[in-house]
Length: 406
Image 1 (spheres, rainbow, N blue to C red):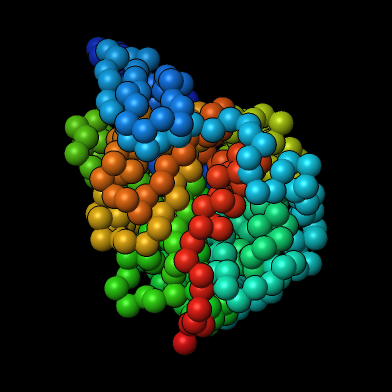
Image 2 (cartoon, rainbow, N blue to C red):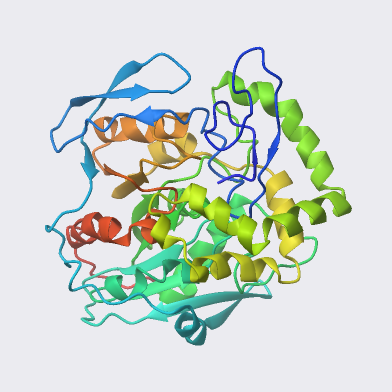
């Protein structure tokens, strides 16, 4: 997600809306909506819902500001509602309450920093199944998985972690945040706390951190990846082969300069985290508007009031974008499940990052991709039923776990 939206044809701002028009900078600032998706999200046109369960079908991609074109997408399926999931909607446990999650939280000390996490023991515990580690996106925390933990824990031991700089984890003054640090934190957590084979499940920038962790040649503990609307970089400066992003680089550098002015950054940040502003931003991100409740607003807003939150925000926005999926995925042979909300305004399926992921099933047999109809940037919280419907069968088909991590 991104806060200052400089995307060409972005549906949530007026930047570069038409040739010849004055460029506008939309300061729709949000701790949820700034960072990872915009590097690839150059177009947010409409994805024609012509998908079905057939293989090698042609799918029309049409931008609302460009001529329509057609690309071939292989092994992609669209999902709405179905009764074929392992756990039916009627059988799914109720979501965990935010206060309940807070009471479950534990602290792990990593490099002298306190890292917040939760663990939820599997109801049907089996050493033949991997553990799951849930990694949130920018501005979120462990409570963002409130609708998923109990359902997944019916058959898997579930962990969720607050990355350094987010949630209830430390937000150290002067820390230089980067994607590689989060990836190392994830690997260390798996090896020191979970201590057994693990599937990483990430959303947005959390997905990208999981990708970087899985690509590490020294790791032996990660058994699979689940990517929910994966980000293209930690912030807007992730460069891909897109002339619009390159054209905007001077403007992005200007934003970096402005955000490094404490008074300016503080004013933007304080405006963003006002309850009504934050709720409006979340409504623009979610496809299912009913999912934007007061608890969700509190999940995002409360950590933003913590000491160090502003410093983390500025460091992440102005720091290096880190590796992108195009560089990482070709090196990964682990099973990968990609779930993509087709109403995501920040990483649209017909933007560069969406197109890249759309092409993967036909190129890499270890990648499965499902489009989730009417779902936004945070599928697990937006429509958890659709996510569980695809995630649980995929998990059940993973190889049996035999050895503990050492």
